Amino acid sequence: MNARRLGTWLAAVIAVLTQPVVAAISTPTNALVRTVSASRQFVACASDRLLPSALCAYAERVKREWLRQLDVADNWRDPILLLVQTRQAAQTIAAPVSIAVFQTDEHLEYRIRCLAPPPIDKGELLSAMVDALCAEWANRNQATEPGKAYVVPGIPLWLVEGLAVLIEGRHEALLSISQRSVAGGRPQEARDLLKAEALPDDSVDRQLFQANAWIFTEGLLGLHQGPRKMRNFLAELGAQKVASNAFWKVYHDDFPNTTALEKWWSLELVRHTSMSVAQDLSVEDTERDLDAILVTKLGPIGGRRGMPGETSVAIDDLWRYADAPWLKDLLKLKIDRIGALRGVTHPLYLPILDDYMEAMVWLQRGSVTRFHRGLSRAEATRAVVDKQAHGITAYLNEAERIYAPEQLSNTFRGYFQTFDQLQKLDSERRSPISDYLDKFDH
Image (cartoon, rainbow, N blue to C red; front, side):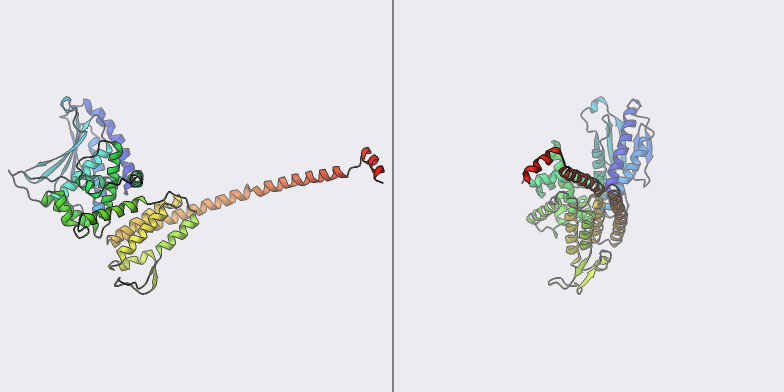
């Protein structure tokens, strides 16, 4: 399930979840219903009979997207508890959604607590689940000793919010906020993202931080072996306990210093915010431009060892050069070109371009299997859109033939010709006055 569908599904589930939560307020808190998720990592408890099952189903979908973003198998170690409780008088100012880590005899337990009322906020719940999943991975390989307190590192806020946006799919709405920030000459710096510990109170500043966290996280995942580096960052965080130390140890080769990081971050901001306002190209123009991007002309270029001889390569054959040192730069260029086309494309082609970009990102990360899968999805979507576009064109042509303005122009032309004939007849018709005046002409 892609991020956009998950966001839609989440909104529907939250709408259902909030009803039983409010209805369960009068239920005794000791009468909790317990449900275990399909992977058995999540355990949900609530007073309502249906709520735990819904929470477990949602948690599994969030984890599925989380695993996909980090390109990792589901080999969890410690459980995550989802607990929904009635807000008591002493909990008036307590956060509606909170996360805590408890040490057990064996390992650790991650507990997400939701207090109702108010109804569960989908954004806060999603962020808490992402936080718990990242923390479980970070601490997975760390040993715990009975009787000795384990130091739990905090997951960086930028990573939690960035992955939450990638999972939920709020890209378009947040992108406009980041665009306005860059256009206004006050873009947020990477160092400010790295050291942030709490979301801003102001709603606009909060959305700007979420937008930049998404761009920053997506950019890191788009690096060479990005998902592996992200996993290493979390594992290193579990070992070192300090996010900044773990970050620079893992990403030192990509960013030798803070200046290199800020330069990379500036380029990522420009790449995401430089898309033009859609001009709605015609279907034919979009097809022509897209076909030109998908065909790659390869030839010997200085400084790029291993470049084959002059040849044209279709998009579905690029995987053959997966180990070539020049492929990453070539794919980045194609992704940028498709992104630029997306800003002016025909609206029908937006999902097609997104699928092509996703496929190229997977090939850029070295996953040939997911590249083929994404490419097949893009081509299938394109076939459907092409059929729809041609059907629309045929319908409009038929409508134009039936209700063509030419028929009306012929009708009006007939009226004007008749009017001219009447004027001519009137000018030629004889009258007593004309006969009288003719005598003076002769």
